[in-house]
Image (cartoon, rainbow over all chains, first blue to last red; front, side, top):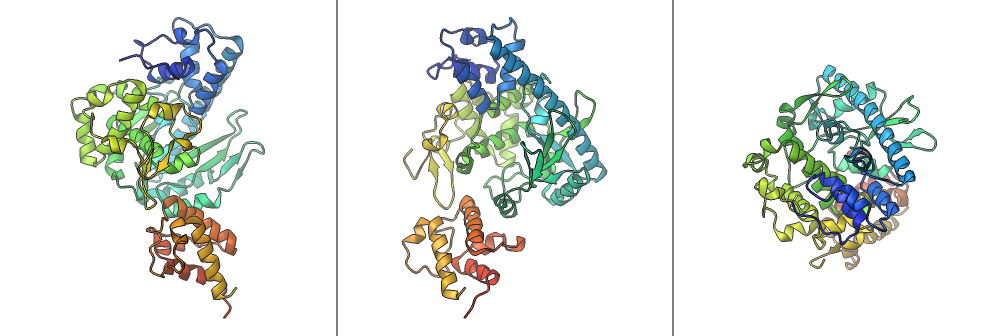
Length: 370
Length: 86
């Protein structure tokens, strides 16, 4: 591992250090104690990248302890406490949902944060969860909706001020009718004083509807493994190579489809942190061509290589070589953003600067120029 | 609304979302909207815009790629939702 450049400031370097979680890099204390370190900048970027609890684990519970300004320590303690409690509530919701899906005979597997926080994040509360993500086969989407209804979940968003579930915008309904790769987001109000609602997202695609890269969901679900969560319930999760494939494809979707940038939902550093941790936790099952053979069989080498090559360049890693994915995405493809009838959007291909930037839309052009 | 007025509104909204169509004074019915720039994001914006402009709601069975394939298919769908006077 090489030390990443600090030209974007010690605050960004610290966030990258936390994302990579590599003990052989600069100790977080060395970065946090730089003269003039701007805690406001660090906290704002951590929030933007959904990494405040991850930062809290590293800065509060690292060894040796890191001296922190009292108000920053208090903020991090509270963020970590709330996140741990939210994760506990969402784990219980996942257990309830899994039991109901089993009773209904719907094959399923939990994905993303709910499957990662107690495994590759070791259940320390560092992985921020916003919802419970579960995958079913496209033919089971309707039965999945029935199960959600039976558990008191309804399609909608929660208005955090009134605490009521409000209908989803018309655009959301239209999008799902045209691109039926998941159910509308479902919500349920709880009696919990802090975690006042839960969201559940049911997907039926590892990529997206209409994508050039399609992965049959049923075989992936058939390979799912059982995971016993810290609080007791056991849920099915994707097998490690499938899990990494999905996490990478999901990152690719958020980073490559230009619409997410326009919606202000561009890819975050936390998503890259998921990929790094998955690779580290399951290295033996992925190296030596094991992952790339799976990807070749699924026809998704190019988008996954896109993710790893950007990851390596942004965070000074060398995972592409370890996984035999080096140079599998062309420089031209790396700087592409979205192919559509309106033309391909392009950017300069510098993922590190893209992640750091606040106004991402300005990084993108149309046609041939960056 | 008359058929002419409906056509004018439809073309006006299409041109607002598809700049390439703005250069065509009288686009043919068989014009492929995807070739005029209607992508997966713009189609959603177009649908909600048409619904607001015309006071209609596309029923679920019309929310399919077939409806938005050509100018003619979209015109036919909109006509079926808006009472047209001779």
